[in-house]
Image (cartoon, rainbow, N blue to C red; front, side, top):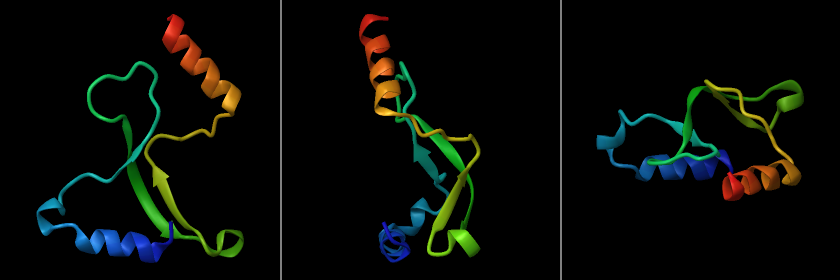
Length: 80
């Protein structure tokens, strides 16, 4: 996604949603109910080595997991 695409989406959202919380969807093992999310703490455009990026910082640290780690989580859900 590019900033231009994000801006276009945000511009289409009715103002009644201006007070909605901005969150990022995450995987949460055994979650029930609404979509698991973490809050966005801040956003900024990158500079120096991060030039050309628009970075979203979440309140909770996110970790990239491997296919094997995801497989193990899914297996635990099935047999757990």
